[in-house]
Image 1: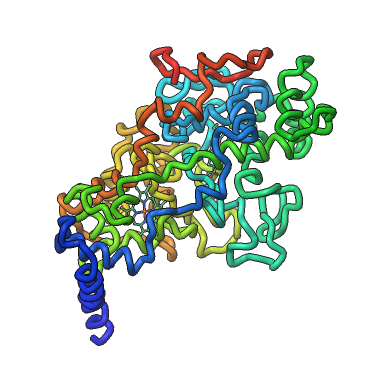
Image 2 (image 1 turned 135 degrees about the vertical axis):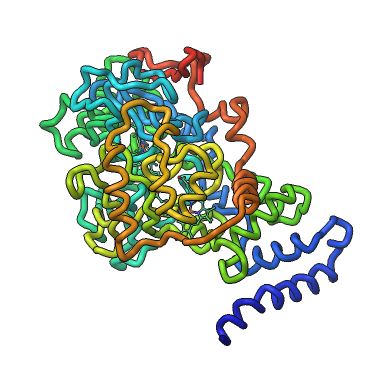
Length: 489
Ligand code: HEC
Ligand code: HEC
């Protein structure tokens, strides 16, 4: 009883404080409403500033390192068979992802066609009619905001920031055991991550280098890039590393390549959102519907909200932790269980309480990063939210026709596999009834987390290499991305 009393009175106490603060200032003139007052109190409780990361700590896209990193990110030369690049699945004009539920990496019908219309060669290795990569490609936007873990299952992990820290700091990766230092991980999480897509046969490595282990394929690709017979790459590495006499074997190393790619990714800071303006005090920056949605988002269920911020916490809208929400397990899975399942965080820690748990995604720019959830099972934000509220109902009524890609596997098994996640002891479905208005208000709020730049091709152009680029790799390996209408992305 006293607990209930405490919970229901908290907002009023905070509301009182915030009103006092407001009276001391000039907020009477900027159209503050009761909703604004309530929201400002919640913003204060959550300790929000609007800024998830320090812009001063990341490289500018104009910096030499980010520029060269971009050329590497857009280069198929880092694909084992030169038919896949980082940008194949992470294009800025596609929200930093690929706009597909599940990616297609190597052996695409047309490697340069990105987004809808990208299809796998029917003659491809292990092709079974659907996408070959088992998880949705997350956005690279605001990568610098992650302090603790990368990947849906957090298998790239800062040992300084997470509970598993061993005191030494550094980064743990799939090359080291869970919680153990990978001495070659590099300068930061971005670099540590960039060392792995090139080791995945389906993403970039291809199927003609099966004899090479992770380090061997990295070194092989670096050496191949350094011995292409033109000074194109070496000249650029010499300039960036300020080493006019450096040789290819000294400069074009897997460590330098992945560091540069990470610098390009870390320059992708898109945080100037209407929500940030609102937090900073501009009451007119977001609509009334969005404000109502924000109240639902930040208020606890006991206070009539949905408590979204208990997981999507802070200015980056994530606790960088793992939860089992039983998002639909479509796709070929990671080989767990009967072979078609994906055990998520459990694959990393081996702990039962982590089974089916996936990392809480950031919600910044979420409007442009669909399809949503770890296997891209939902194609609207509304459906993604409705799933949180009642996963059982969402699974029972799941409509596979929302997936535009053909041949996505395990539709029949999806319900069986996902039911196991719902029945698991760590299941955290919210079990809440919200009205249609509350849900559409939540969507309106989520859309205030979009930096207008990510919807503006002109604004994104500094991060994109396209056919207007006059300094292309003479080997022809630059990926000039086009859409299904054969137009530049
Ligand atoms: C075939 C598609 C594909 C290609 C090519 C690809 N990725 Fe990814 N990327 C993914 C998928 C899928 C995931 C999520 C995998 C997981 O969590 O298990 C991912 C995850 C990431 C993440 C983690 C983001 C986060 O929020 O945790 C980063 C960063 C990233 N990729 C960068 C790169 C870089 C750099 C390259 C090139 C070296 C690359 N990717 C190539 C599909 C791709
Ligand atoms: C218990 C923790 C938790 C709560 C509470 C929660 N979420 Fe999530 N949310 C997650 C996790 C974990 C995922 C990813 C799950 C997966 O992919 O398997 C996710 C995914 C999402 C996504 C998809 C993002 C993407 O990039 O794919 C959206 C949108 C979202 N949540 C919005 C909300 C909203 C709105 C609320 C409140 C109604 C909410 N969440 C409450 C943990 C939570």
